[in-house]
Length: 117
Image (tube, rainbow, N blue to C red):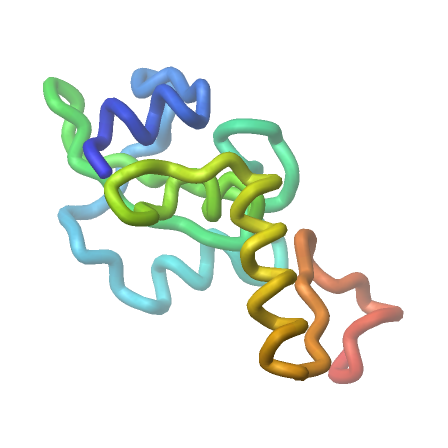
């Protein structure tokens, strides 16, 4: 997906994105952004569960931190981006067809929910 299309879907102002190192991001850097104290999602402000570095024309490399639904919204799916609800429905159907018990986390676990504390 092109950077401009991604920013349009997220409704993000590229001038407000935090600067990032040249891509690709090191795992430690990415984890620091979405780890124990996650950055806010650039689209909705919820805690980010994913991050990426995008080279913004005229600005340079920037972090794009997203919550799970917004990360799904900007994930390339057959040449088009799927609305979050469509992507989650497709995932739900596939999981049921596979007969697998799963839980989809749309936010980080709280300390009470996390078995590791």
